[in-house]
Image 1: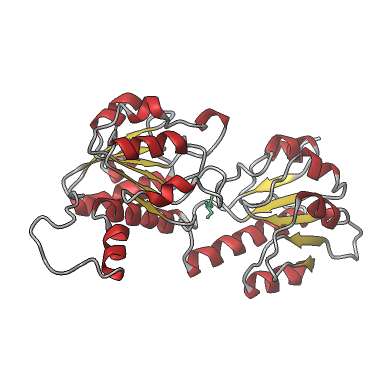
Image 2 (image 1 turned 180 degrees about the horizontal axis):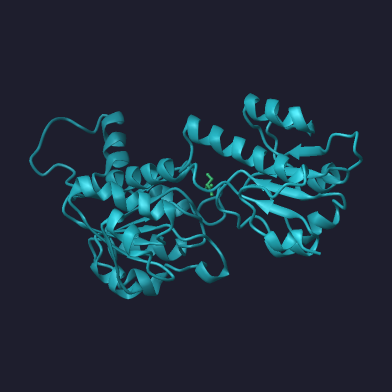
Length: 329
Ligand code: DGY
């Protein structure tokens, strides 16, 4: 980048006007307000003369793409999860990679709770029955759900979002247990009112199991047939993190044969082409990857990504740098 030229950045998907306004103060911006996702090859071509990339989880940033973008200095993901980015490949090329932690914790925790409550009280199923005219009046044993209050909540993955989910359980008088790579600090455990347990103990004891681990080869199919049979037949499984953490075919079998009671899902393997068998099941609440999707939170995510990108292109260390090693060498 020469001293008198603004860095050129590509924004792969539609963002908010304020995000573009901020970027344009510092950069020459190629936007995509029409929101047509780039095919990988087209993305490589569009990026050929760019210094920066602002992307989303629908864009794959891998070695091949980086090879097509020799001037690239920074990649800013508009998401906290970054399994769409090959961070190692970025580091090898000295490309900084950033994500958007922190600003979406509460909204994502709210959505996990929406799925818990929705699955427990069968809310999408009964709403459908109202809409189709199937509801003809009150009955004592009508579409019975299960209680969330006083139940045991098991959280797998106790980062910031997991802790925000746990804190909400206080008002429901729940017992909260969690499993993580290692226990969180005692002070955070106290705030979350949660106790560390072994993975299998969590599967066996929880009435609600919420998955909040990032997706990686290590967490691929963390929950499959072998784990589902260890859960209570009354258990409700919530996946509000990433598709692939759950083996969806195994979950469908478990929901069909009563291995567990129900599920609430915001994410899927191969989304948006989710396994069509989910659509035929009443005991699953299905959301379209909207965990962080409130106006305020998505604006904050996009702005944080923009600030990361601008900082990186100014030669500063961006606030949410994933690969500080990229700066060495
Ligand atoms: C994230 O930030 O990882 C979310 O899944 C995006 O909505």
